Length: 149
Image (cartoon, rainbow, N blue to C red):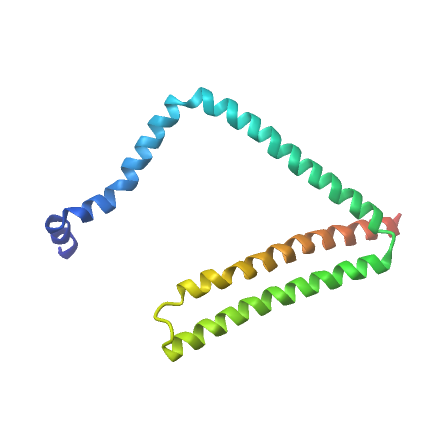
């Protein structure tokens, strides 16, 4: 009963609920009006993106093919993977500790700006670790296939 009274008393509350529905309806209508232009643009963009990812996959495959014979190179890549993971965990933990300490001391009222400002290294190290992890897994599979043959 209380939320219904709030909607009747404050008309802006109704707008907060209804604006996503109205925005969706407007976007659907605009999408139908500009469909021919959008279709040609997205097809060109799709081809460009596909070429980029195919060339990147081809370049990675060439690197794996060249590196799979060298055991030292495989060990270096595994070590890089471990370092990236350590940096990711360290940055995550240090951001968490800084937020907890600063909130506990009352230096900041809200940890959100701190987390956003310190979140960039976390995302960078996570991306580096995940890409290196994928590369190392493919390198190990390729080296194992080579040794079996």
